[in-house]
Image 1 (cartoon, helix red, strand yellow):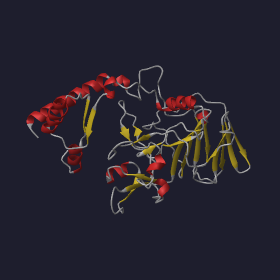
Image 2 (cartoon, helix red, strand yellow; image 1 turned 90 degrees about the vertical axis):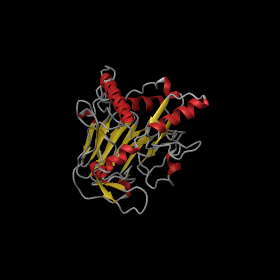
Image 3 (cartoon, rainbow, N blue to C red; image 1 turned 90 degrees about the horizontal axis):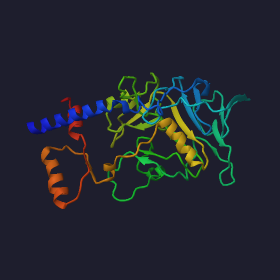
Image 4 (cartoon, helix red, strand yellow; image 1 turned 60 degrees about the vertical axis):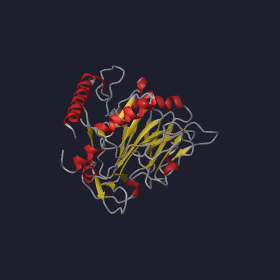
Length: 345
């Protein structure tokens, strides 16, 4: 790379650091706004623990469901869920025979005490309000049929329209994970479930940064229910995420498996009260700022080892020559990633 290119990149990096420092008070974990001061640790009064299962009643219609085979639960903020300390809703928790019953004004949860990880036979949640004159009961095997769509992690290879309904991508990914496709929180089914298993956590530094869940050592569970995509297929990354590493896949990316059986679901059972569902989502995940105006303009992004000539060609011989405006130019860091893996950084 030419010296002038290195100089330009260095100047840009310094400018970005300066801007980050200037905007530090806006960081989502330590916002200075009095309206949003997230605390990832739920009020103890909202928590019901039964052996290796833990249930957190976040709102009348939103319950967190956790199971870990050695009882090590996660209280840290995750990439999606930053705030769990909400006003404790009115609810009851009681034992009825072999069952634990948790009731709010909108939901009834039933779990067979001491029965292990959540399955269709030992856990269910029933909505108080009927949907289309029918009682709705969810379990972990329930398949969404009316979800109104969520997000995809990447638009690589996409040409034209793409479905945001995750089951449509089942053939592409044998194991669907939140890293690839996530359904929305509103659904004609009356319920939606977000799986937070394996997601990144924020560390506890003054300037919070990417961390990994720590669930301790245990036996690898080579079960597809506890299998997640390794993304870039890096063994170090996989192990750092608290997972076992499986390199037996003949082609494609390797897979990670959790050391222990771990489940972490957020159940949204709002019926057709979509406004309340979004309100509860914002309560745990944070306010959604309006996008800057420039993001609605033309953008160029490519995963490529760019050099200065590439950038000039894209801008001058491409957009500028054609008279097309360009508001955002994303230069993906393939070259940096490759050099880092080769031990050059």
